[in-house]
Length: 77
Image (cartoon, rainbow, N blue to C red; front, side, top):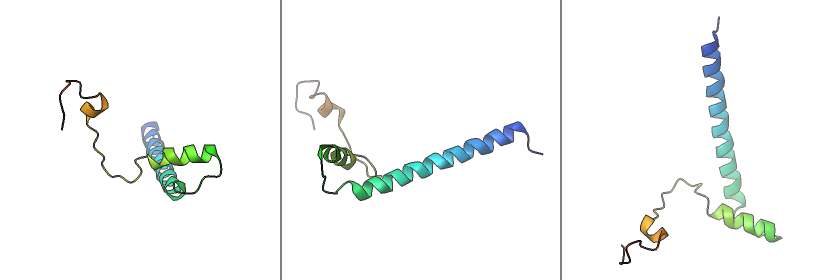
């Protein structure tokens, strides 16, 4: 007989798997539509947003100093 702890574990594990499937499906769908020619402004904004999503798993480095204008006044990097 299954006790409550095992049932909660299996349910949580299933939800975790389901969320991973949703993220993967969303990534594949967005990757297929991000370069389509937009018909209106909403689609253009959506495509620009989707093109910036980190869906490919590639690492893009962002230097904190560049985000805040150097913070020290000197040249960075």
